[in-house]
Amino acid sequence: MTASTPLLVPGLRTLAPEYKGILCDVWGVLHNGIAAFEQAHQALATYRKETGGKVVLITNAPRPHQPIREQLADLGVPIEAYDDIVTSGDVTREQLSANAGSHLYHIGPERDLSLYDGTGVVLSSEQEASIISCTGLFDDETETPEDYRDQLSAMAQRRLTMICANPDIVVERGDRLIWCAGALARLYEDLGGTVAISGKPHAPIYKAAVERLRALHGAPVDDADVLCIGDGLPTDIRGADSQALDVLFITGGIHATDFGPVDAPDEALIRRRLAEEGLQARAAVPRLVW
Image (tube, rainbow, N blue to C red; front, side):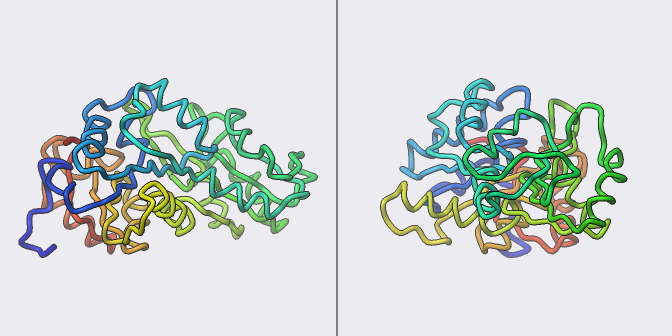
């Protein structure tokens, strides 16, 4: 794409014929934590039907993929919209299994405890722990990362490694932005702590998702045949760029207020922000539509 090529496109249909597979973000693209975006999941279903392409959802959710599949169904995302799911929780479980037998302190809500099933780690108190795993804030409705500063500082002084299961800093929940595990991981690093991350924008989750696309096709799929879709500059866009994968930037997600009217973003502002971040996008659209 050159500077003279329009960045904003009408919808996925403009790009669809060029790609054999899509790696699509979930939260902010397919739903907002409260309700599904009907046009978005219809776009993916249409892509699958009309092109024969495969869709793998790639999400920084800190749980294994099966609970996410159930959550999507509850929110109204039909199975016709995708072929499979790869989560940050899935790839993080490999890191956890490598620490089997270690005493681990979990930071995050109880709903994420399925992450540890079968990994061999021993859930323990903060005082007994030799490693930390963070899936989010205990109460993301009322807490902020600053509420954890003293606790994280003490852990950093003990040189405990934090395994961060969700690199997202924030996500949309309805019309609000909610802090995620990535915000705590960032603070922990600022305090001198060591953080291990497998989810977006890091390579392990992309490698797993691309391999899943290839398995679904039952044939080789070149990286040039893969389109990523996402709304987060530090995760979705940076992750795709780092793996040399094309990406469709959904501007109406967590960065919606940065580009003017949500449904009529200013292309110049989008280009400027991408340049400032050192990022590239194959194209952009306010919301995922066909």
